Image 1: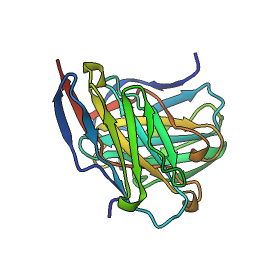
Image 2: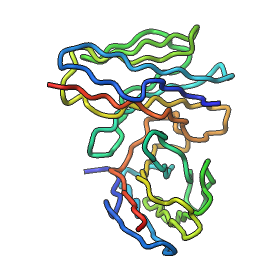
Image 3: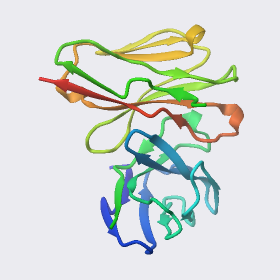
Length: 115
Length: 116
């Protein structure tokens, strides 16, 4: 079945460690997105990519990095520079390079806890 | 200032009651898009509806209905005869093409609990 797969679902990290969250889609979508969700804060955009080898910062990109080497993959690295990384991370994709061509499809999320 | 305001943080209703989730948006564009998404306990957001700014007709889909009013910049969502399976967090979102294809701006969400 087509969809977005995020892994791992749960991740624990010690302070000072980098961690990479995986996002893979088999929908042949052009654009991919990373959002962060905190209780009572809604969804905040971290990074997005509309084509391979290109990506843009969102509203809260500091302390995060991404790559888009393949159309189907958009991994997110949470670096030690991110001061408050404990959160729920959601990956999404959409057909075409505009979110207005269709709805966003979301993965099931990755919950990161820093110990 | 928030572009999308969902003033209701949490709502609890008893099964079979009707419930309306409010969404107020802010934009200077004449062309824009409004969305509603549902986030069940599994965590994955599910698309419910997209409406463009030129279509003010209300929409009904089964027990769901949406009331779009440009005069009050609102795009409210009503669930009729609520069921326990409707329990979720619901997000309203705004898309503005003039922003150069930048992604949607989401409200903070409303957590709906339907009690049996």
